[in-house]
Image: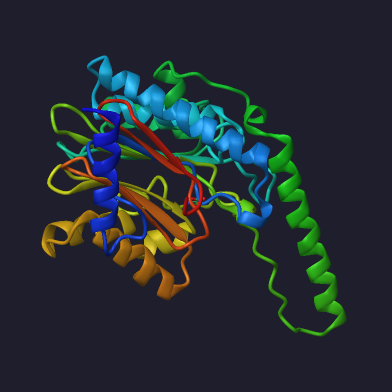
Length: 343
Ligand code: ASP
């Protein structure tokens, strides 16, 4: 297909889209996100360059798997592993810190054909938690393993194990130290002003996660998500990313979904399953379902976040109620689209 004809098709699709927050791209085999990211005012040219380059290499890695005859699960795992290894994303190396100064990682993966799923939560030594999640799915009789048990299982499965300090990076360390400082100052102000509750300022760097959705040539969907969670989360806190039906879901009859945002809301609203359920039972498009859940239900509840959606026909879209979302997709013939804000 000629380039001009292809771009024309994308434009027509975008123009026809009325309900979604974002364009719909056709013939997509892999879509990814790298979290909500930072507000425009905090974005720097270097950061944007790193984010875009990271998204591109993740898309290329996943696409290479599919081209080599791999499954959607292979593509999801490969794309997420690339982002886990890049400190610019909040997953694997570069994960955010807990309130105890640890890096505790969550991940999950799901296959749309069999509804098999695997997840790990609170792991501290598995270099690529998404591979830990896949091992739980394929090599154990469980869906979710947590903490030291999950770390031990990953080791036993021969996955790469690293010391906990591997995940720590300078910029995440600085972010947590700033929050601790603000907390201390707020505590001081509170004691000076009696018991007036003082809200801590919210900073976008507290969010960010990676995820992927894929459709292979056999028509099978898969989804996966990996994160360090939210900055300053309580040690032991588990977010939505390893929860099937909240941060991740795949169903061959509807779509594959990966989410990012304030995890507590995504768990309470069963976001990824809710999107799939709307597609199946309300017979709405994937774009309309994602828009309803993210831009109406979650927004009304005060839950900030986003979802990427790939439906069973290869239509990819995303919905976000934040200022931006690091996201991208690659079509069957290898055309890459990468976006950070509404661009
Ligand atoms: N959803 C993740 C969590 O709550 C965080 C994120 O997406 O940035 O753990």
